[in-house]
Amino acid sequence: GLFGALYFVESIFTYFNSEGMAKIYWNTVYGDYKLFNSGMISRYALISISFSAFTIFGCEVKENYSYGGLVLNVHSSTSLYDCSITDHTVVGASVIGTMLSVSSLTLENVVMKNNTLIRDPSAPNLQAGLIIFFTSHIEAKNVTITGGSAQNGAFLIFGNLAIGSMTDVVLSDFYNEETKGAPLVHFTFSTVTLENWNITNTTGLFSLSGSKITMNTILIQNLRAIYENHFLMSMYSTTLKVSDLTYEGNGERGSLLVLIGGDSNSVWLNNLHFID
Image (tube, rainbow, N blue to C red):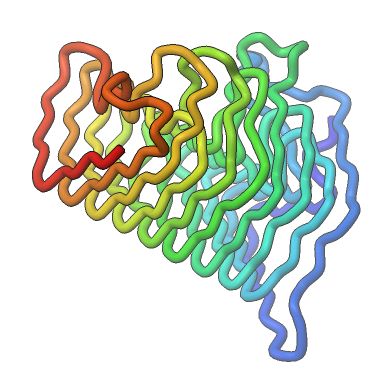
């Protein structure tokens, strides 16, 4: 029945040390019961937070193994400032963790490097992503994601009923290793703004369903053409507003690359440039 190596309930925790960064290295957490009853969500993480506020200014998170990732947020807020999260390989649900039941995650000046998530093959209903949101809020600014991969149906970001924004994001050399139509970022019934993203050398990008998504100033370069049904955005029943998007290809896809695939969408496009 383990919930986490650290468990905060109705607490306020803030770490700030001007002399050095908090170091979270080489921990292993593996609970007796991995999933909630629905089988969709991990029930524990390295740090489990319930009805609490958890903030770290300056941290190095490296080479940990936790089925549910760094944090499980339930009715809580987690904020990470000036942190690095590197060199994780997890067979499970997440690397960063799950934001659940009106929780929030704030990331500012965060680097995520060489993190690989392999969705648990023994949990067919599990929703897996380096970051997961269920009815929760995201605010991210100045985030770099480089290296690593999502495998066996996992995502880089999975959001269901998510709200928020992600600004000044660099995404490079991160791959979804599936062979057919596998996106990196998946939103359902979410309202999210993505602004000033620089994306290079990745596989497929956005899968959107029942959502309202705004994208401003997006640069996409050198998508890897490793699977079928290759779209920049696969959409269903979604409202999408895009302004100032530039796609620079590598000659592999040519005219076969489709901006949008799907149906029942409302789309507003302004100032798009495709160069191959």
